[in-house]
Amino acid sequence: MPRPRTLYEKHIDAHTVCELDDQGHVLLYIDRQVANEYTSPQAFSGLREAKRKVWRPASTLAVVDHVNSTAPKRIASMPDAGGALQVAYFKDNCRDFGIELFDVLDRRQGIEHVVAPEQGFILPGMVVAAGDSHTTTYGALGAFGFGIGTSEIEHLLATQTLVYKRLKAMRVNVRGALGPGVVAKDVIMALIRRIGAAGATGHAIEFAGPTIEALGVEARMTLCNMAVEAGARGAFMAPDDKVYQYLANTPRAPKGERWAHALEQWRTLFSDPGAIFDQEIELDVRALQPMVTWGTSPDQAAAIDEHVPDPLQEPDLIRRQGLQRALRYMGLEPGARLSGIPISHAFIGSCTNARIEDLRDAARVVRGRKVAHGVRAMVVPGSTQVRDQAQSEGLAQAFIEAGFEWRQSGCSMCLAMNDDVLSPEDRCASSTNRNFEGRQGAGARTHLMSPAMVAAAAVAGHLVDVRTLVEEA
Image (cartoon, rainbow, N blue to C red; front, side):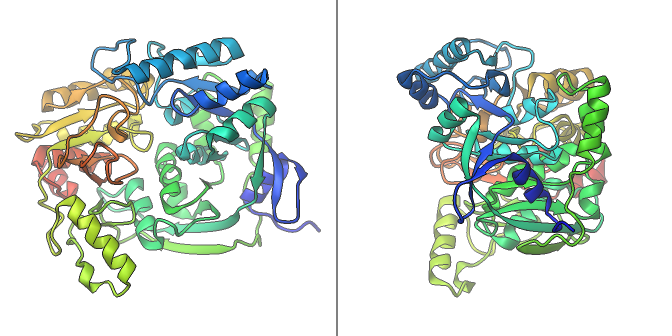
């Protein structure tokens, strides 16, 4: 009788071309890759210098998303000369190597981790690698995605394979109904706070349990996207009928008999009863409250009704010094209430939280309200398709009437790589995935939270519990 296997083992076993040693290294076949203008140039240059072709061009989808402007009126030009050069070279590479490209004027353009799922380019059972750490997002569809470096991108383009070391498997069982105002972003932030920014290093996380089953596909994407902030090299959950319904009407999903055959295969993608995980974590979210970060790492987070911690209460010297540095950078004092910290900016966007359900959540908060005086608030949809849908549903008008900037799609203020950049000591309520020093601009201060919490902060002018605004409405 075969040994019970985890979902992770099933993915890796099915894609192993050959074992390379007894240390867990294998030659791994990769089904799909998504390329962007920022992480691919050196890889393409390497191919050109070696006079190599791309092995399977149709397996790669190229998207311009990192350096483009998100100004309300879409323009083809880049905000700076360096970005223009990157995009021009990217277009040349896609043309010369036969790779399909969604450039900034394409109606399918957007952030790669939003675009690939909505196009049906990522399917259950696939193994996906790309030059962006948040490739883990695709785990919500029952695929296994992970980020790779530039030299690996070149190897993948040339051979459709990667040298890969098997990971340990961690299962996170999430139980309990989420309360009002509590969403997937709060769940993943609570997990990262609990296990730490390196708590899942060397592991692939499988999310399971009734709470996960109750979540929609886009909420699951948020979980998988931010699992990398706990050190995970991959994260996913077993696909189910919600995933199949999500994919059924996407442009590139299989049709007819091919769809029926695919469903038959996808329904085998689950961890076998009795499969052994290297680590199991139980997370009860019944009492979970909306979360915000106070420091410069995603694990430096707390419930909105809590206070900034006192580093002097930390017995470990290294950790204490880290906490002190974080508070100095953030300009916060120990003991300060998180609710009430004033902000200068509010940003709703990124591959973590810029899908249609995220925008619906935020729009519910802002309807009938105005952005607080002195706050610059922005909404950057995750793709042009999401933007169009939000406009047809009236969400865009709700944001505009409240005083938000309604912008075009792109990575935008998630990272200081385009013209959406904060100034030193600006303080931003952000629906993004990282609050590192300088992430949104040199000296800028970032507080991570859900899109609805960002919307609440924008209208209040300070960090606030979204539930108080929803109760008032």
